[in-house]
Amino acid sequence: MVSVNGNNHSNALIQVRNLDKKYQRGSEEIHVLQGLNLDVDEKEFVAFMGPSGSGKTTLLNLLGGLDLPSAGSITVAGDEITHMSARKLTSWRARHVGFIFQMYNLIPVLTAFQNVEMPLLLTTLSKSERRSHVEAALSVVGLADRMPHYPRQLSGGQEQRVAIARAIVSDPTFLLCDEPTGDLDRHSADDILNLLEHLVEGFGKTILMVTHDPRAAERAKVVLHLDKGVLIEGQKRADSL
Amino acid sequence: MKFFPFLLANLLRKKVRFTMTIGSFTVALFLYCLLATIDASFKQGVEVAGADRLVVINKTSIIQPLPFSYRERLMQLPGVKHVTYAIWFGGIYQSEKNFFPQMVIDVKGHRQMYPEFKIPEKQWEAFLKDKEGCIVGRKTLEKYGWKLGGRVPLRGTIWPGTWEFNIRGIYEGSRNEDDLTQFWFHYDFLDERRPPEFGKGTVGWYMVKVQNIDRAAAVVAAIDKRFANSAYETKTDTEKSFAADFVKQIGNIKLIMLSVGGVVFFTLLLVTGSTMSMSVRERTGELATLKTIGYSDITVLLLVMAESLTIALIGGIIGVLSGKLYTLIGDPTGGLLPTFYLAPPKMVSGLWLALLIGMLSGILPAFFAMRLKIVEALRRT
Image (cartoon, each protein chain N blue to C red):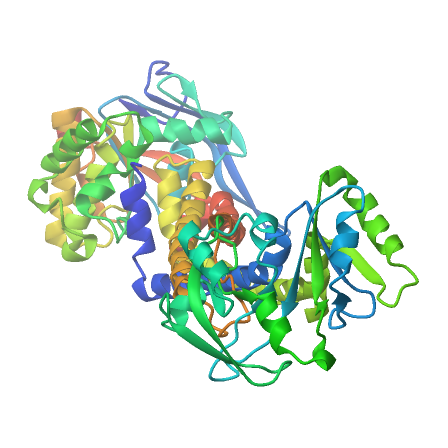
C-alpha cells in the first residue's frame, strides 16, 4: 500500500514525514519539496511523475540517503536516516538501497561481472561467494552469458540490465530508479520495465521509480505526481487494487 | 587484494598516459641513483677510512715531501702502533685518459695498515721477491685486460722515463665500497731509480695507526708538536677528516646533487600531480557512482592514493633497477670515480622517495575525490 497523507501506515517500509528541501541560489531560496508525506509498503512498485524541476530526483536522492532534507524525516525499515552521520549513511546505502540510473553509470574499464561485483567488494564475502552472487544477479537479468563483456561491447538495454544486476546483487531493501528507460529505445525500455516488474512480482522487491514516460509509469502499481514540491496521489493500476 | 583488478583497470584505462607517468618516475629515479652513486663515490674515501688511521703530510702542502727518517721518530711517539708511508706516482698508461691511482708503497708495513685489502699469500710473496713487481686492483686489471705475470709500462710524469712493472698480485676488497682500482709498487724500486734532486730519501705522506682510537686526537697533536719548527713541519689528521677535506676541495658536491635532484623531483611532483588530478576529474561520475553504491569517502580516497602509489612504485622499481644496472657497467668517467657502486640502502631510499612523491602527488586528487558531493557529481554527468 502507498499513501501520501502521512497519518496512517505506521508499519510501512518507507515512511516520509513533513519532508522539506530548500536550496539557496544566490539570495533566492528555492523550495523544492514542501511538507511531503509518503508511506510505501514492501513489494510496491511506485512511479513518480512530474514536470522538470518538480523535485522528483531530489526526492529520490533524499530517499536514497544521497542528500539531506532541510526538515522532516525519512524512516526505512525502522532506521531513521535523516539524522545519520555521513559514515553511517554510506554503509546504510550499501546494505539497503540499489540505485539504477538513466545513463547506467557502469564503470567502462570493468567487465559486466566486475561491475556487478563492485558493491560486494565492500562486504566480507569470499571470492567464491561473490562469484556465485554475481552469477545469480546476472542470471536474473538474463546476462549470464555476457559476464566477460565490457560496457562498450553491450547494447544500451544490456548495459541497463547489468546496472540492475549491480543494484540487486547485494539484495537491498529497495530499489531507486532514476529514469531507467530514459536513454533506451522502446523495445529495450519494455525489456527493462518487464525486468523491474519481475523483480517486484517474482522477487518481492520494492521499487521507487522516477520517470517522464507515461508508458513506463503505467507499469508501476502506483503512480504519484509531484508538482511544485507537493506530492499528489495518482492512479493505481487495476491489477494492484 | 580484492580491489586490485579495479585498481589495475583504472591504471590501464589510458595506457599512453600511464606509460608516460611511469616513465617520468623511471627517469627521475634513474637520475637519483646516478647522483647517489656519484655522491657516494666522492665520499667513498670518507666512508671506508679507518677510524684508527692518521694521515701525516707536509704542513706546506701534500705535494711537498717528508723525510724518510720520520718513520722511526713517529714510531717512538706514545700511542702509535704502526707506521707506513706512500708516494703518489702519477704515471700514464698508454694515454692520459687511462687514469688509475698508482701508489709507491712501503711493502713491509702496507698490509698491516690496510687489512681490508685481500691478496693471496703466494702472490704477495712473489711481489716481495720482485722489486719490479706490482699489485693491481681487480677492477683496473679487468679494465685493461691485464693478466697475472704480465708486464705493464707506465710513463712517469713526476719521475721521467718509462717504468715497467710485472704484475705479481691482484687485490680484492672486503667491502663493496673498497677501491679496487689502485696500482702499488715497491718504494725501493722508485727510490733507487730516481735522481737525488727528485726527492730521493723522501716519502709523500705517512700513515699512522693508533693504539687507541679514543686517544687519536692526542696522537695527532703529539705528532705535529714533535715536528714543529723543523724544516719539514707536519699536518696530521684522521684519515676520515683528511678524505672529507679532499672532497671539499672539489666543491660542494652534496649541494649540487641536492639542487639537481630537487629540481627533478619537484618537476616530477607537478607532472604526476597534474596527471592524477586529470585522471580523477575525468572519473567524477564514476567516483560518485561508487559513493552512491556504498563506497565511503575514505575508501575512495584510498583507492585514488593506491593508484598514485602504484605508479610511483612501478616507476621507482624500474628506475632503481636501471640505475643499478648502469652502475654495474662501471665508472663512466674512466677512473675519476673508482668506486662507482650503488649501495642497497640507497636503492631502498630511492624507492621510499618515489613513494613519497607518489603520495604527495596523489593526496590532492584523492582529497578531491573524497570530498566529492554525490548529488552534484551525478547532476554533472
